[in-house]
Length: 195
Image (cartoon, rainbow, N blue to C red; front, side, top):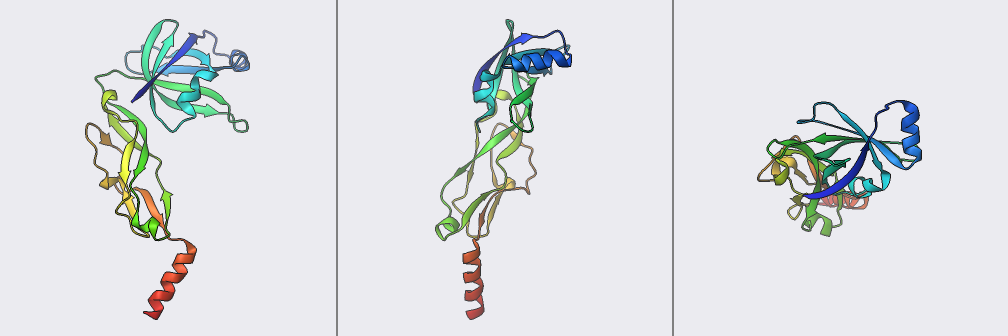
């Protein structure tokens, strides 16, 4: 899994006026918590550093460098402005190499479906799967084959086989379905009544 460094600066005041000032200066207020951290660390980082972390379908481990203190973490939650969609706040969860962590990993569709060749449309129902494992074992993405899917058929989480980590998403969840377009539905119904 890819790694990314975010440089942060501690902040002592947690009042609203300081948060507004930090945002006006182009930084994002952040907090990191988790195993090995006695008290939450409040800090801020330049917003530009979040571009590769947030505005991408890829998942990254983050190495926080807060005034020289390095902490391995994952982005747990991000809050955005409701109108401008500017990043307002980021929560990081620290982790240790020897303890399992939970993350959402993107799904990567593989193969070509016979249902699509017949005019069906790929409908992605789950873009990510929730997983648990050691950081070193977590992949950038989880490959999901659709090469066996006919019209109207789905691939479920239960069909995805992985090694080194556990999928927490319910086995009954559909990941991808080959939808039947309206034009084909009408044609299929006509064929069935004539047949």
